[in-house]
Image 1 (cartoon, helix red, strand yellow):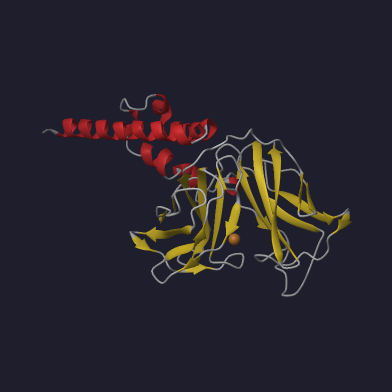
Image 2: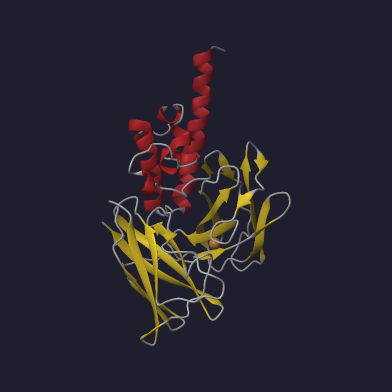
Amino acid sequence: MNAPRRLGLYGAGLAALFAATFALAGAVVPDDTAAAWSSARSAGAGEAGTDAGHGGMVDGGVVDDGMVDGGEAAAPAGHGSGHDAAAVRGLGLEQDGLLLSPVSAPAEVGEDGTLSFAVTADGEPVTAFATEHDKKLHLIVVRSDGTGFRHVHPTMADDGVWSLPWTWAEAGTYRVYADFVPEATGENVTLSRTVDVAGAVEPRPAEEATASDTVDGFTVTLDGDLTSSGESVLTVRVTRDGEPVTDLEPYLGAYGHLVALRAGDLAYLHVHPEGDEPEAGAVSGPEVAFVTRAPTPGRYLLYLDFKVGGQVRTAHLVVDAH
Ligand SMILES: [Cu+2]
């Protein structure tokens, strides 16, 4: 068999594989999420994105660049441009040569089990992680519509497998992010995979922008503009019954921990707290400030974990970046 013919058959096989993948994705992933994946693929493949299944997909690099690991969107480090600070991240299972293994978790709603995974490099589990925000690894889980947010900290066994007890409260497609700093590079990495949970799914309408949320009697209000043109300061203010809360306790190396995701594709923003790390036993409030930058204009889902009286609560805010 000559080389061009072999390549042609290989290409046909890949095209069939990806046609099947897209059929599946269309069934379980919201249209806007699939569209984002498609446009990422198109960006890396010129006109190929409109030609799936007819050869455009098999060109070298196309698959890696959009479909599987987020490609250039997820790994822009080293370009040295002003866009680096707003890099899109967390949309793929690979970054900087590190891979997120398949995520094992209960398959159905209400089934008690274990969520587990490993981070690998060159086929070997990674076991050396630097401490960042008080933890070696931060696990974020959220459903495709932004509901069901959880921010938790699994433990790692000697073989590099991270795990924690897990039960799903609702069916749907979830994105699972591992946010960590490998000791080998000292560079922050965010990897993710999607996990499907069987059961009836009730689609929810897209969320409206809201700069305030009340949880357990604590009201969290956001001040400051999220922008794509540069870093900005977002300040959250916590009150209870109209009174400022001044006994916010340190949590994950700050007086609160903020996760920001882009609505539509759940791209993960890097957010860092402003100010020095709190000393043990110190309290603060009612305001906590964070610095971040949106990768694009559009709607973003914010989740603030804060700790009062030894209990961590999560407030949910929705903001539009310009
Ligand atoms: Cu964490």
